[in-house]
Length: 220
Image (tube, rainbow, N blue to C red):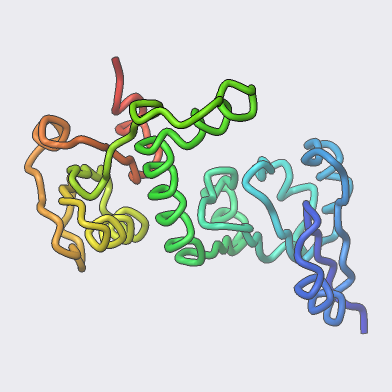
């Protein structure tokens, strides 16, 4: 019995690829750059499944190049803006993603960036590497404590609310602006408008989806 053909557009974790090799005819596109549309069309012909990456544009032409055998497009990550879901529905192809797997990681990284900016870490690193540091000066590269600041979060979904939890645990007051009421607020206070949030926040972090409505949400 022939194994189903599975195409993976980028080198992935080897233990997961071994699991796929056991049950499929696995094709991995192992190139330095994302595959071109023509390359992907060539590789996907006759495939049952496509394991895609956010950089891969998976439209109706790509699906048709696979033929009627294509049953599922699995996205590596949470976002699936690169997949034409309507085209997939028309062809009865399932589209899958992995929501929730990077919630804590992304929120923690956002807080790390906030800490870095507040404490001027990157600036201090360049200062030392460029040979400008000679001795301790009390007023050099002073930052400020986030624990005495107010964080405003725009978009209070999984990632935004978890960032609120981290900030609250670190002594920050947390405000949020969201279209709907979240399941858990972790002590954050809801603002009635975006302007109200901006007026009352020392630090602002955006965690809303990129849509026509949110494009240029924060402008000059």
